[in-house]
Image 1: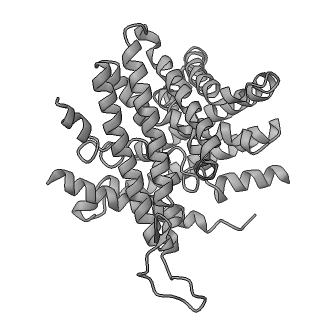
Image 2 (image 1 turned 135 degrees about the vertical axis):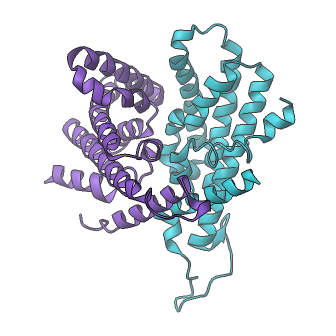
Image 3 (image 1 turned 180 degrees about the horizontal axis):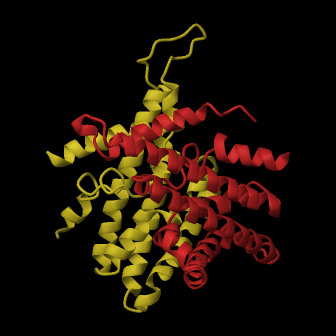
Length: 190
Length: 201
């Protein structure tokens, strides 16, 4: 039951993009086509889960016993950067098809603040190891969901007649605002 | 490029937020009021100037292959300093900005300037560039924060703006949506549109 609450809260109520404003750059940058949005969502799911698992262990089994909590930011970002590189190398060797699908998105993920953000939020939220991993997966799904819906809207937006001054980025932000407004309807269901 | 040009380009012409669309997460996340925007902008500006300074000093010592990880470590160190100092001296603001302070590490503006400018230019020019970009970023966040605060909570830097009708309870009727999440997207959308117009004319 607790797990279900974590999932619903993270995917719908506190959606990572539309309510917490993490991962806005890929949200605006790679949401022009549904195909790329799905690829990016998959890559984020993969990296976010792994990164949260590893940073959780570092925080509780390395930093805390030695009283080095102030090194959290530095160690987390280094671990995430190294992890992304490692995932890229391993994936290239083990599953070239998956690498083809996710490859171009992996380097972008290091600077995706959603990954570091969720790693820190997991620590701040005092989750257990299982709870933390579920939280990371749910947030990644929430990210993918927002990205895919937004990409779907933007594909249709290309065919619309938008006032000249609002074309391109400005109208995308207005659409994202309306989407955020829709997601606000989920608040209160848990 | 002259000092004045380097200093002023971040303001409108190459504004990191409105024109280059970098560092959007803190821009949207913390700007519920003008003071939050200003605090976040100044914290980022400090990290930007210091990391530009250090990167430009040691640029010749860093091997080319590991330059990005080295930049990230330099940036993360200054972010940790800002985090600890703000926690000690302005705990209320630190609480408000919360998660977005450690996230300055992944702000593309900071790494972008280290890579694109400081790793190729002299120490003095790098400081000026960091200062210019920092001012531009602070300007953008404060502007968006002020717009959202005025529309959403009827105040400007905490002082009330008496332009709204008063309801029976005695509180002003404002557009509450602007201090909530959707208002951030909508407000930034319109500001980008206006800034595009200004920078083109």
